[in-house]
Image (cartoon, rainbow, N blue to C red; front, side, top):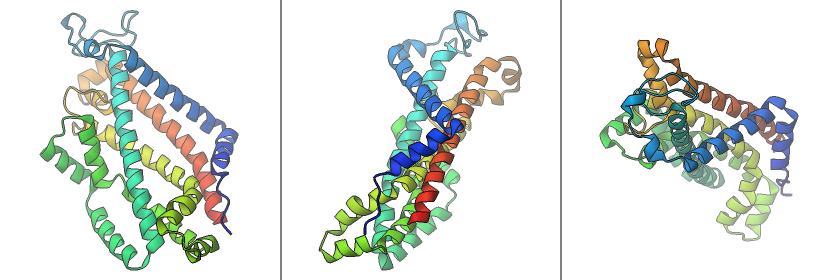
Length: 290
């Protein structure tokens, strides 16, 4: 008999609703997303990015709520543009990497045998390569000039590895259940069984895994940008804004230039962590029932 999967989202929402920190984290995260993307849609980004010598390094005031940077640009506008770029990279890498991970994990878990063995060895060898080192090498060699180019590098290197293993294990378990055997006996095509019958039963585990990947990708993008290995020079990002803190005089005397992005990154990671914990509890309950 096929397991019931329609209540996966209901179970996740119930866990989040019963956890005040997770609920606050979810609405805070959504609020930040709406603020960032609406703000960057409304403002004139070309004007916001222009240098203004007359307003360089000004502290917060009524005119500039978060002050200005070393190019005289309003820090609030730059923070919103940088947050949008960082969030877009994070979402692109997470969605694309998850798509690859789901496809590979389903194939490996469903077919098992030689297919699984060969692919596991390939993934194992790929996973042995230090991801950060490989990203740094590709970033230096290819020098991507766009947000999409940098995202592609991160996806290629390892945006799919974690989820592939999780989906593979859970698909192997699902493959032993009666509803899969019954579908095969009835002649249902394998691709239909995988995507229409097996995948819906992995929704809670998949969502939990994607939450962890989302947090990891956000941290990775911030770290690479902080080191100067993220987006091309002149393109704001949260990590790039934080990197000014490497200058001791700026860190001590111009806190308004690095503290807001640091606080924003901290809040975003905290929100994802609280929501992720609630989703993980729902996924654990689902695993025990499989």
